[in-house]
View 1 (cartoon, one colour):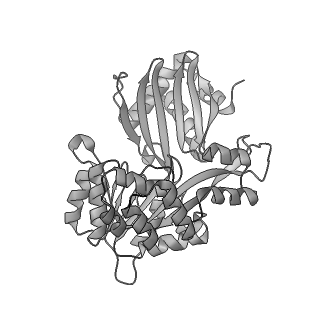
View 2: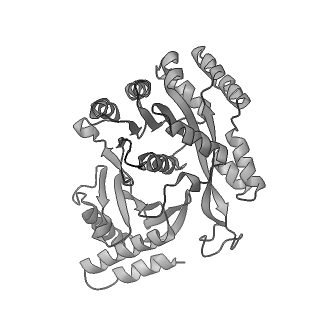
View 3: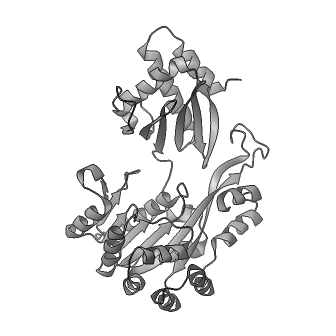
Length: 379
């Protein structure tokens, strides 16, 4: 049985005229996704047509499919809107659809990738005004907010965030940057970013997007940026030894550095940096704190068995939880001795760190989310 979205798109594509109905059909898809608040649209080729999925609150929902005869037109229109080559289907391509191109309230990043059944497209929506980037409204416990505020009040040091893709790290970082960039009287701090890509524009922040093809990598950009008299630097991600080294040294030389790094836990970040070659004395002197965070879906209060507003999932919106590791004297000694992750976690908890698992269990106790959702996110 066709979904309402699938029927609307099919009806538009069935009109006689060639180009205008295709453009309007794409507009129907984009408007529907934006209204639903989805983060990504997946258009996946299959033998029986182009499958449409929405990523909503971190999970993929099926929204129907387009028959093979119409799929090519649909994808070509998206390529035209996003400035992607229409005559190449054998390579990966990226593009962007600005909000003004279709009058929507969102910019859209577009990615095409070849598969055995044709090209797969993923459209990421950046909704304007959908997020306030306010540290107090993220949903963290007061202890974490207080620790983060203390870290960003410092003139130097390194703040690192970790968590899987889609765990809300970018929203947390933008909230920190918004607070840092806020003028105090006639004074303000010089805040610059190196991102891949720039997802939202933050007032008062100078933002740069990496371009590896032109040599503008995270490491190169960070080294060059240090000559621009920055006070606060946000590096989108620490991916390699060079970026890790320069970021940590910048935190030692009068700069406040904020970045992300992939690891499972806050203590795991310390171990990861050590494995990347960051020396213990530099790490202990520059690192201020590490925040590990996760997002879980909230139980829908209007229809626990599923309703129209939650798309029948039983969940609506997401809640954040995390653990924050602050560098204390006992931790400095343990890091210098290259202690294991387990030992670092024990010391951090004795210093007051509430681990991720306890944060998840509190949301469960407050009936914010379900046990199944906790298991999905935490394993």
